[in-house]
Image (cartoon, rainbow over all chains, first blue to last red; front, side):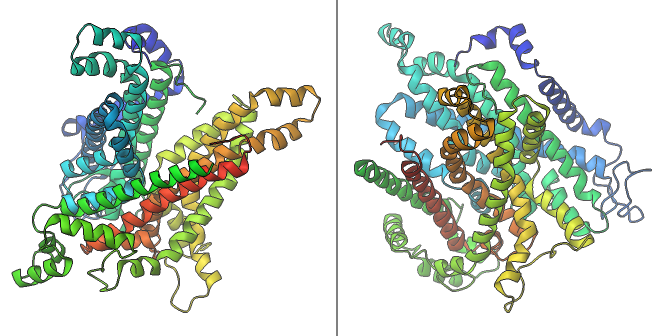
Length: 285
Length: 313
């Protein structure tokens, strides 16, 4: 649980890419994210432009990945929808990390808070993620921000649990004791001495949460209880394409592939980061 | 040991109490009047006032909370707004397909994942090992509803190997109903096997490095016997743990899979409840499922005592 390896960049990168799968995953993920980010430049058509004649055109010709039931270009929609899906994943990874770090640090640092906060974490983790997310989104409403908030509440306990456990260990180390003796404030100790040294497991977990959040968003949108159907995400595209599955399976094939490839890449990157940032955490999993 | 069990029971009760509190708060997080929200935009002010009174929303929040917790502890989770029936009754009426779907898919996941996980650990680093890990990661990356839709389209609609969707009519016999669950269970089983495979492999790797395995080998015991009798027996504990952990995953998966295959289970009920703004049902489902999760995890911990004589609390 040291941050030393983060500062030693060449060694860190060499470790990270020592497994070729991690390098490939990173290239694939950056390519997908880059294409989605530059959708306005690279998309072959306007994602909202409808054409009755092009309805359900199979992949090929003018429509590389086909056209949907309104004659809209699937590839262009996929690129723009990717912006939404990836932003939700990133947003959830960031927000759940912030919430989880605050809860975990407090639970690990203040003995009196530990028991109630740990029980709260246990209780939150007792709810299956999709079920809790459904309940939260149904109450908050299906905007992008609300989906991010709901999923962050669902995933924050995972970060909190890791942060708490690491804080409990670090809190007892001599240099923390030294900082206390030197008169550092509690906040300074928590941020500069504890948080800085537990960044590695947080980053690793946040990468996995990025992946889970994308899957969860897709699930919520598929169920029709996530994003507003007019907001294109990979999940809503599958939901829309579902009714045409017998005539045009490609309508759900491509968004499904986009989700799966992104999630797989993120999981591989997360595995690679875990091994590279903290060899002691490296498991044969 | 009695003290340990007592401590765990107290801990479990505290967690269930917090679960109830969270379920209570969630519905009150809604901006505006929950009654108006439940009735939708077309409701009149009188209707909203009547519902507020029916739900006790006109009383002080602490009184509402205490009566909610008191009722829940007595097994009263309120009334469904849509069915006009007690929530417990509505949930119980939908439990059968969800329970069997979860059990079958867990069974399928165990049958697929345990032998592969053991073999992958035994032949660590081999092609089969790599292939197994990669496939497991892939299975965990594909949205389960997507696998469901694809298999439904090709195996059920096109090839006709399985019923396409539903759970049969009211007169359908038990075995026929179970036939409807086959394909959904396979879909959910594939998804869940990923976690079990990784877990089994990791715990087998730990065990294969233990001294007693080396001792068994050095005594000249056959490999088959070493793996199946010495290692597998000790891998039971981690496998029990993972079965407890997959519960949450199974329920999440069941919600989505029931929707794909139009199975009238608890998952489908919850999604419909969201669309109908039937908040007592959503709340009730959250409480039942979370409490079951807590209970199952306590039971798996206690099972250790039975399976492994070395574990002492």
